[in-house]
Image 1 (cartoon, one colour):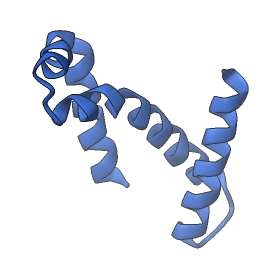
Image 2 (cartoon, one colour):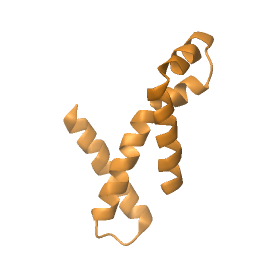
Image 3 (tube, one colour):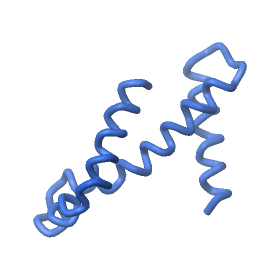
Image 4 (cartoon, one colour):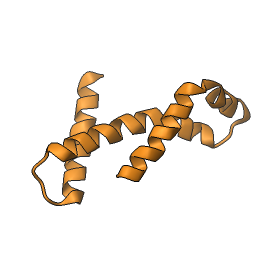
Length: 80
């Protein structure tokens, strides 16, 4: 989970700091454009999942991650 947070955080920072890379990716139809487009969203949901996972009293990491992701998606849906 920590590695995924670091990777998506770096990609999200890159996409937000240099949006020209995303636009150039769309212009040239490069596959990494999708990664840079979705990286900020994946990062936010990953952070929410990690925070919710820390609060849950479930001992199994798989179950707590699944419940944390479901709660994060539900919160995102409620905000929208």
